[in-house]
Image (cartoon, rainbow, N blue to C red; front, side, top):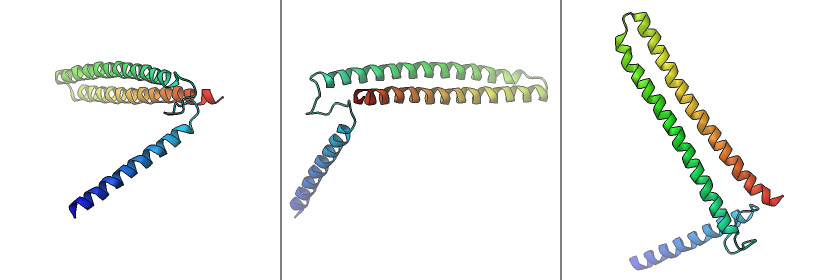
Length: 136
């Protein structure tokens, strides 16, 4: 009895995977310029696409590393300044330094999010152009 249940489950899983693969192939074939396995418009199209994809990913990772380094340096500066808060002599000076640190933290956070949003937008524009360009 358990064998029948296992066999039915295996068959259902295989059919589901096949249907998903076919749906994915058909969906990708709707995008002009996107290489679909089994139907290349030219022999080296898949290799070119993979090479472009690899180069784009490498550039995106490099930009993300640069962004992380910038963010890390800003964080270190803020931490260094926070240690200087203990040197204040008056409550007014403490308040001013706390507000300055708060602003620096939020400015750093805002700049990071803006940079990430610009990076994502640039990346999406490049890939949309690559998908649309072959159709034109």
